[in-house]
Image (tube, rainbow, N blue to C red; front, top):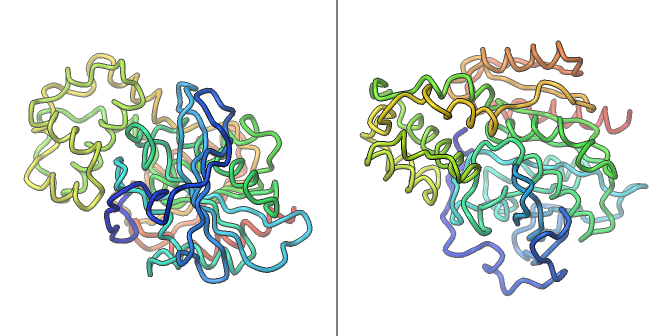
Length: 373
C-alpha cells in the first residue's frame, strides 16, 4: 500500500491550482453517477503525447449516497482509432485520506509517475485516474471501502466520456495495492453498474486482500512492529471505516492515543502519517480486541472483495516477497475467484510490494489482447 513516489502536499484543491474550474453542469445532490460538475484544463501537466484535464464528477459511496470525486484525464494527441480511444481506468496506490493527498493531476510531470501514464498513452490508451471519494472533495476518504472504490472508478469512465467524445466505451482497469483492491472491486461490479460500458480486462497488482480476515486479530496485546507503515495502514483502515459507516462506534475500541492517531489519519498523507506514527504501536491505539462486538462484521461489510461476478478476464500480479499485500492472502483470493468461475491469470514475481514496474508490460499486453477479443 505505500505510495509509488514522494508526494508533494498540495496547498489547495487540485481543481483550483491552475485557475477557477469551468462549470460543466449544474450538478446537485442526487445527480446520476458520472455527471460532471467541473472541468479544468491542466496546461503544462500533460504526460508526453497527451492532453490533461481535471474533472469533478458525481458518484456514490457504498451506502448509495451521492458524493463527488476528482479525476484526471490524459488523452493521446492525434487521431483516435475507430470507436475512440480505449480507456485505462487507473485506481491509484495509497496516498492518504485528506484533501492534500490528491495527486493524479501530477501524473504527467512527476518523474516516477510519467512511467505509469506514458506507456499507456504510447500504447494508444486514454488514461483516466480517479482520486476516489473524499480526496480533494467534501468529506474524508473511506479507505479500502470496496463498493465506494468501484463506484468512483466506474463513474470516472462515464464522466470522462461525457467530457471527451473521442473516448471509447471500451475500457480496462489497473491499480496497485489499494488500487489493486479497487481494481478487483471494480471488475466484479462493472457490468451491473454501467452496462453501457464494456470492461474488457482488469489487472490488479499486489492487491490488498482479505483485510477482514486479519485486522480483527489486533488488540492491546499487539507489540511494536518493525515497520512504522503497519500502524499507518491500520490507522487509515480505522479512519476509512469511520467514514464509510459513520454510525459505527469506533471510539469504543480506541484509547485516547488511538483516537488522536485516527483523527490525524483523516488528514495526513502517507509519508507524513508514517512520521506521525513512529513510536506508536497498533496495540497502544486499541482499548480492546477488534475481534469483539460489531467490528468484524462492519469491517467485512466495507472491505471484503467479491469472489464472484467477474464478467471480464482478470490478471493478478503478486510479488512473492511482499510484506504489505501478503502473498498467501492473494493466493486465497485468486483461488476463491477461480472456484467461483472467474477467468483469472495469476503471475508471480521475485520482488516485494512494488511489483507494478515489472508487471506493466504484461498488463498492457493483457489489456490489448482482451480489447481485441
